[in-house]
Image (cartoon, rainbow, N blue to C red; front, side):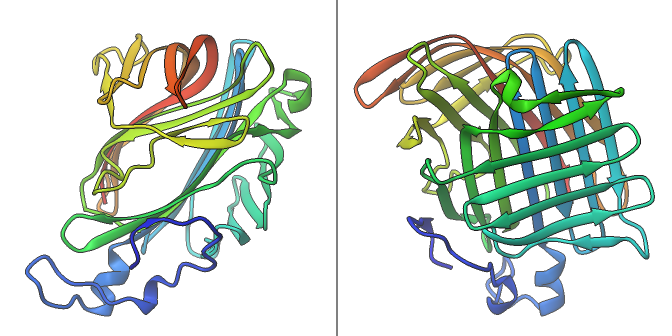
Length: 321
């Protein structure tokens, strides 16, 4: 694998074309490599007092998805898991193709056609139609080593205009009416077996109407390279390491997120959260994704950006897979 940042689209991720070593220096079998292979995508949109999100995860054994909508204090969620006979496909190209999970309880579809992206969620309780374009933003593309033998590829954009609508509890809301901004994360990887990471994302507008996007994490891609950065009106600026402080016993209380290089200092106040905790032979997870608002400051390109109430997400995730 070629590690580092990629300025241009990478095409299909041909994971099966690469041999993988085992931790003791020998070669892993093809079956062992495929067993270690993971894929997930997250697409969300957020504004003041509103958030929608949807994630799809695929392992060798199962494909699962969750989706939610939070608006005017009401929260609706959907969880899906694949079974024999369900449609369960994951696109191997972040910019072309379809990721799809169709079950008897609902459907999740994520489609990419170059810079044009779409999310469709359809179930009895929740429907989402979200589209956005990456034409006016720089895209984060990064490949890093993971553990002694693995690697990960991540592709992200944050704070791009979201269009479409969502329907929860029979009430439809147009994303344009609430000035929502979208976030997209495509990650495909051979990851260590028990990762634990934290993540924060801001997608908002400044008083001068510039868009502001932030993506920082700890425990994912810090093997000599970082995915941490900030988008100002679509232009990406690198940030240093991130530290996360929060109460594990009261995870929806305020978080402190600050930079190891002193380049940002943020406080996050949750409005609500999506939580999932469970163990199985194929995957165990303790997962918390919160949505709310940030205040603080970020130093970008020799200027300090003051934040008062910018919408965004935080996440804490432990996985045994």
